[in-house]
Amino acid sequence: MENYKQLSGIKSWAEEDRPREKLLDKGRHVLTEAELIAILIGSGSRDETAVELSKRILASTGNNLNELGKLTVSELCRFKGIGEAKAISIIAALELGRRRKETEIVKREKIVTSKDAFEIMKPFMADLPHEEFWLLMLNRANSFIKKELISRGGVSGTVVDTKIIFKAACENYASSIIICHNHPSGNLKPSDADLKITKNIKEAGRIMEIQLLDHLIISENSFYSFADEGVI
Image (cartoon, rainbow, N blue to C red; front, side, top):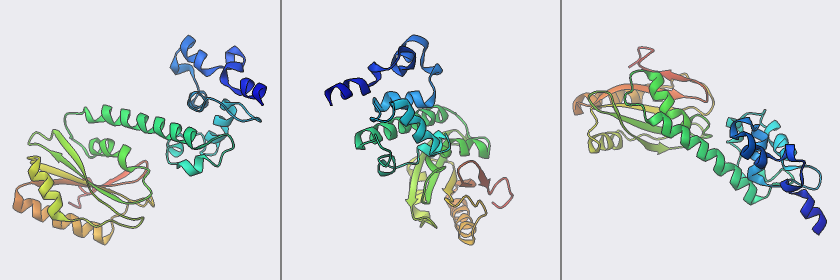
């Protein structure tokens, strides 16, 4: 067993197959997704190397990192050679990648189009298995101030309290707002409830002198804009 343990790690591989050394020698950009994941997990199993195991995990998601990011610890642990610690390492690395992208997006100074708002919220909402309702707050120049989660619900809906929305908007001195929620089903068509809450928030905003600029329904790769469709 001692010999096996010594031979199963990355250091025992042929030099050209060692992702750590490859990163140091040639840079991170030349590594494949499987090699990057292999660095995270360190070793495979008796039957396959860490890179082979990583390829198998990626293949199960159609080689799609966004799909990989949806896997839970228990789902990753179903792969032979992946324990809880390795699963957590994979999830943590993907979350860091998501947050890095989020940081880059938030550097936008203004929200001018519905797509600008979608790009800010996509990292938070695109792959959720449940509904969430978020608020984007802007100043008079349409510069982004802050985003805030208003409510979290189940697969088919979430409860929205208009008072909470405008409390947050007032506390952050917002001149206008954009509301967003996701449809886990991927169906972007507004429901009757979506239309009603939009109407209520728009009317409350008129009274509070905080304009509702848009309401976005977000799915994994696209969105529906009430403003663009002339519904708001």
